[in-house]
Image 1: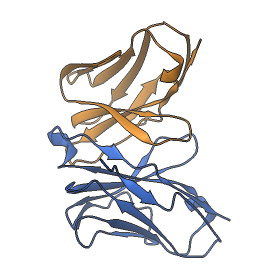
Image 2: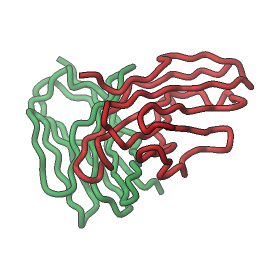
Image 3: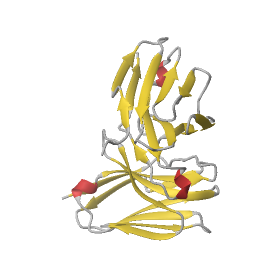
Length: 108
Length: 116
């Protein structure tokens, strides 16, 4: 069993839809990152959180440490949100482990 | 300001050759990480430096892989006797301090290594 599970693996949406990407992990962590990777592009860190909720523009990330679960939400999705979103928990040893990512496509 | 810089952006080499991949982290960032990403996969941890020392090299796949960071800034990932299975995008990231202490991680654009 993978230490990090993301769902769904692929997601398509119409512009304006509310998007949710889920991440479950099975190890103890100190924090969790949500990363964004555009096709052929580099990785951008969207959020780092260790508890509760963070919001940045149309993006919201939540984490429940007890349940070992985090979600990334995108409100009013837009075609430019199309990318791969990667959940990356940080182990207590400072090592990041990565999910395989969720490929999001938003159509106009 | 300048972000994390990786050179070269693309490297094609023949099986059995030696390659060096370079990472220039953001100035002042003490933590530096190397990852490898194969097509369709999430990044895979290779090694983590805190300053000049490798704090965790458990992700290096075998002894053909080695990384250094002699002055605590630039890091070089070295691969000996390259194999076709080494083909991947090699990503470098840096942070101001160990990222578990609320320090964001900044990624470079990666070096795409192709072993023919």
